[in-house]
Image (cartoon, rainbow, N blue to C red; front, side, top):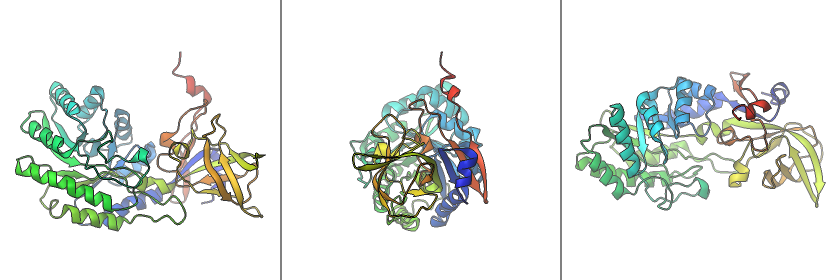
Length: 402
């Protein structure tokens, strides 16, 4: 589909998502893990648009949430509560109550105090809390430090010995039911090897627990498989990823009632999204060319936050040689930059450019910094485009203030 008419119709900045591509990515997981009892729990934090969540639910997906707000968002989109996994290190009592009343599938617990509070809330509501512990396997994965989560120094999860003690302590408790065990070692990981290593380490604990009389039926291997952002990047193979987990888990999944849970986010939606933005000015300054767009870091924070790379593609082709350019936004921040010294074809004021691979952690991380309304969102599906979120109005930014 030609993207320029969408920018004219809906304005810029504009997020555009290819729902057919998301569906293909979702089906690819089912194909790669064919023959295994698999439940995909899409990571809502990557992209929580209601229309997208509704489609995922219709295709059979469960969901991984990390807040009460994400839980309510999934329910508003029609997601089944009994296919929701609630992760995160800082669940509040109110969030636990919300999830217990909804009857979610599983709490992923990350500390002893959290488990104590969960038991207290479950007893108060007289609802059994099905839980698993997130085990920190101390596995290093090659990714950005801000999105690595599997080492001892990170805030996530429990060391295996501490997790074992908590499982045994919870054994036989009236309002706690140990059902799962899992790990999550980070995001944008491009090798299958760390996932298999972590799975083996956590499975050793699962087998110890079985021998001690604590049986868990859900093995959560987290998400984190990356996508190719740069031209020439090696895209990690889902087939190799699945093969590594199959080999690591062996026959553990064979008994009826057991299942492998996966929490993909970026791999489902990242490459299916683009941010369209219009060039406001081209400025020559200090020996450099600055392409100033109407999208800023408040619309797409990843380059400022992580130094992340996104391909930038002008929608119109102009004759001339490629040159080095700074692609920046309008915010009052020097860090408001999408690309440093990027080699690009000629670009002029008024041109439209697409910032690619922005479907994950794009709109989800956006803000109203500099009192800027957040972008509109559009879904393309079956060759047709429809708006799935209108652009915010400026007056809405202070509607809750007094």
